[in-house]
Image: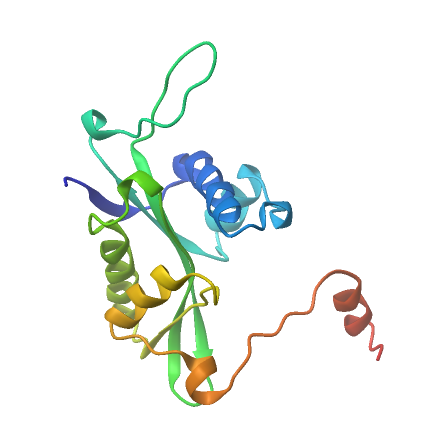
Length: 179
């Protein structure tokens, strides 16, 4: 299948926002999405971006068939994306964290996800990173199998680390020195 992987631009934020909602729906957490296109534009394309992104795009003649509404039929040429940012391991040094890797369902199994992940890896290596980190849901067997096939390993299973989060009121309370 013909496709290209390229750096995301400000103009891609509408499609990235759409695909974030699709990913959240697939992961059964669509009620958790609190950001909008404007947040992506500001946070990813300002002077000091919080994240970087890449887009998978197909030619117009291969665009998606699934978006239709009562008045017109439209498809998408932007069919996948990855958001990533740089972080640091106190043991290993520079690292890249892949926040999202998403390919629209009708384009899966065609090498697009692997190409997106490969590009994030290339960018990480070019920046001097020694590891690529990301999370995957425990019930998402097809993704787990895909990642294992790429040579990745399960940190939770092998080292016992758990991904932790503090947000909302708990984060505010913690920031104020509360217990």
